[in-house]
Image (tube, rainbow, N blue to C red; front, side, top):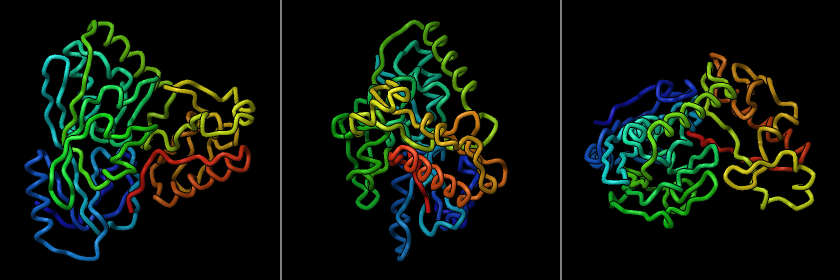
Length: 313
């Protein structure tokens, strides 16, 4: 059932956001189809496009109200068949990782401590600790917003790239990811658990865990997109995760951005790629810090850094 005038603050990891004029929560693919049919029958014009919001861990929601339909994706279900798992797109990455640990399946350990859902991880090709979502995806099922037609996309057809996929910036932008088929290998349960605990500890040590944030705000910069001379000048900033990248954390640090604050938002002193909400941040506060960071890095290094987060509104 479509609801009206729902506050999005509670659906944002940032605890920032205005009202959604229309809001649809879906727990299953059937809910999604039924809800979209209801939406089409309403025939409301002059609205923003529908937007899928799952855990809200990578979406900066504007404080202004969103005049359109927000689809809150909670499509559940985890089914194992041998070394493969079919997961609903609304399943939390942490829940899937726990399932993998319980069943001695290896391949998602790099996702330890990641917030968000599997659908979101596919859309943005989430990655960490030298692992990426694309490495475990066999295929992705989706439903088209407009036609309600279902499709299945092979790994190759998903056009995965660094923190990107066909669903984020390609012709799949009008598709709602519904299910994902993933491949794993059988491993030693204790070894899997130990690795997960180690990576969670690293996250908790390096990241500002006490404040709302969207995690990494900016992407690292692939070395092959920069001139060789600049790579040489910045060789101390290069890391391999999962391929040679210029660390945006180091660029932000060297640009003197740690601790910079505008309103209720602050660039973390602990991890400057995190912009934290100190308690009363507005979306404009965060946007202003993003603008400041981009300008500082461009001025100092001549490098245009790009957001990993997406905007709503």
